[in-house]
Length: 542
Ligand code: GLN
Image 1 (cartoon, rainbow, N blue to C red):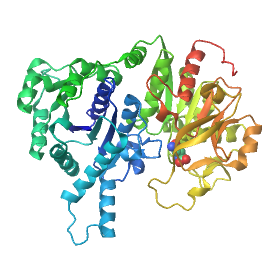
Image 2 (image 1 turned 30 degrees about the horizontal axis):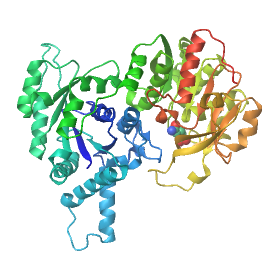
Image 3 (image 1 turned 135 degrees about the horizontal axis):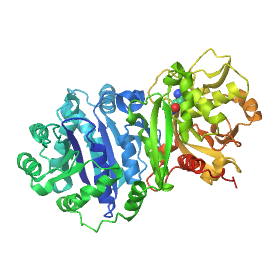
Image 4 (image 1 turned 180 degrees about the vertical axis):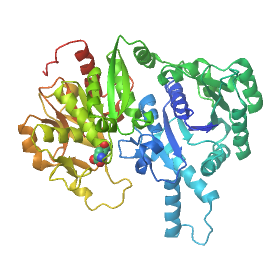
């Protein structure tokens, strides 16, 4: 029998439901249970792939090429899972399926309605994952805030699941904000009480309430939450602000949450084993060194745009006992004030992340040129890789007008061009080159030193690539493509052998980075930043 744990949120979004969901998964995992997680997103988009990062944060890419909500990234990192695209359910996906069935005639003669047809499709998806994944517990996080119109069919579906799966097999967790007022320093539980009331109006009585607060809630706040939430005090927990989010499972479990959940769901409760997790958290919280990295991007105003990249840098930092300080720099600023590029000298490394469209690309090119000419460690991911090729073509190969056709479709030197199979594509949704593809790593290169394998599998999300017509010219001038697709048609990794560390990949290593198991390209970069700072020589390749 699978245990179903549902997590809802109240008062406002971004309250930390994703981290609480991941943390509950961890509490069960360290007690020996197998878990998986689903994220429900009540928006009408079929997936997150068509949304701007400023709307929704980064698009997280799964092995099977799903363009999903960033919470799947938290589940994968906390629980060391490789999820599938079906682990992200959206309103768009559900309605698309129901409408296709209606057109096919599956409901012939009937009036197709939100209840039961849409709610049945939601339950079918949840149950199918529970069955396929053979887990002890399935966590389902409902995105948005209780009270949103678009969330209602999902809440109705999970309400029905209590009746169908039974009391002992279902658990409702409600996470809501408890603000502290600036003036009186009082912890205010009223917004949380209202959101619990709203949840009850829909027919769901929470079993557990998690108060999200900047500090541990005091006994008065706890008493009120229990009283007005109609739950025992033992079922109220507090997710207070900690230095690292990886501490959240530890602080919640310490309050008794893991044991409470096991008891309530009648799961035989083993002793939790946090040894590995604590080792990682301790390394993260007790660094011996520090490096400062400039992230030169286009979505620098919203940290959530680069969340997997941030985490990959932190995992790499923990592995070399180094605190990684990231400064977000809007690339466009260099364009209006070219002199300020020199300020990058104060950084230990320069990082150019993914991106789309032309805004800020000239600024990113200036940052890459600065890194290359001044021997500053550089890592480029996806667009960062493509822009590194353009920069090299312009300033080393002398192709002054080299560009990507994404930026200038009329460029006489399209060193980066649309992939041939992309030409006829009109639909924008889920049509990029997505998910895991095999890459062959060249021996005696920095790439081989980092990956120690001839074959690697990495996640992708792009439409453009290196134009093979320019390969000879680029290589002749010293750019090494140390990773390629098996048929050698696609360039996947580049490096500059004479530079201290100049490395870029068409793929996104950050999606495979895990606490305690950093991704090789991110590790190599952070280690190079540290070595350079400490005045160490460039490491040998053998
Ligand atoms: N815009 C580029 C492309 O589509 C790079 C995409 C990315 O950085 N993920 O190929």
